[in-house]
Length: 288
Image 1 (cartoon, helix red, strand yellow):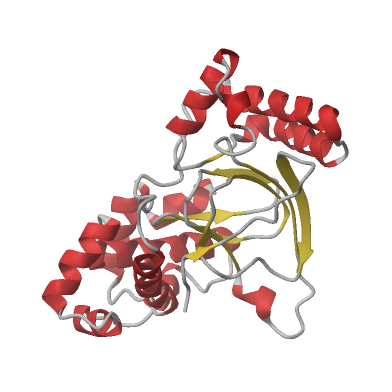
Image 2 (cartoon, helix red, strand yellow; image 1 turned 30 degrees about the vertical axis):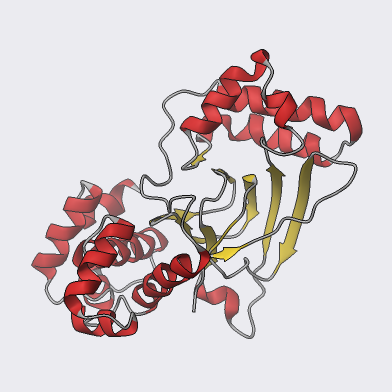
């Protein structure tokens, strides 16, 4: 089952920020969180990003920031796990903790704007496409430097990010920092069950049984922790998958997508799709 794992970033005695690369068959598979802020550049790979309780499609040439203690996971598409797959993922990631070794630096008056920016976007964001070239170049500079030169480039990166206005948070419903690990695991196991079975005719009773709750208790619990009803969350998962199929072209028509994603009628699919995306499936396909 998918769990919100408290993840420890390996510390280095001679560094205040961690810069690492990954070159693997697929992404780490568990929903996890850590006290460090994370900035990740997807060089190669695609799938679904789970951020807090929201989902986004992700692709190569995208950069994402995750706030401290924000649950997240890059879920590689299923083909990455097939036995004969030649696909792989490549990333460059920076981890830093403004409350640990960097605390004195972030307390300086000159860092006030950066600190306010990071606080405002603790729910994370995707770096706008027009800034991709600049930010990816700065990440490459960080990767290829060390010592005080790396620290200075890091500060320039923070300044470049904090100058950006009007970013859209990845989620508005992230887990509270105070949630304990057992509670986080319980919520995530429910979440994972829905994601794995979205294309079936899921009932409230069936999902509640997975959580060892009565349907009434489950409804209150799920709404409290996710701010969604089961139906609205299930629809969000289904439409997310439908959008992915529409963009990839790997389908036999809109009707096949609707039924394959768990909807029992084309009319209901079209209505829910438009309520979530603001577009009809056909318009969405034409646009993207």
